[in-house]
Length: 195
Image: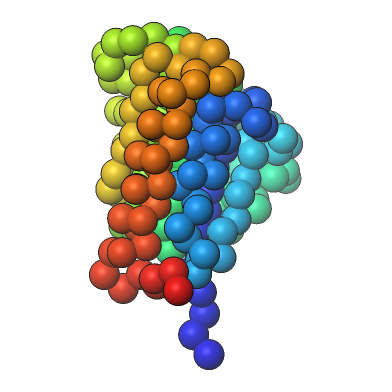
């Protein structure tokens, strides 16, 4: 019996039912043949990086803090693909997601992650502003983060004008685009197809 491919889904928004969650749900809709593991980053216990270099001095590449970051790293290591859904806060990630990214410092130096095959990743980002320039910083940081954990940004959906929780027609349009990206992942060579 073939094992199902694993999709790690990271929801970075503090709002469990906000626009980022709606986009993520739309992305996941066509992926019925996948083992989907959703992590709501603001609900996790992630200690911020203290720049103590404990992880590097001992060459273990493990943080001195035992928290939910361990589960995330294990999930990333075994994932077939990843999706990250996030709002834009002051051009970047919400603080809870930034704490996760900062804790990837040891992985950047660990040869295991450097040698790991780059797997597909998708970014679903939304912001209240109407300018696409709002995404410049977050997309740059997302690429660096994903590369560190052995993923390659394969597709992105960057949605402006999402200032309210229910941006109406704009949200419906964005959900359709997110679902199309999910279908694209499902249709990639070597990936399962929903029955």
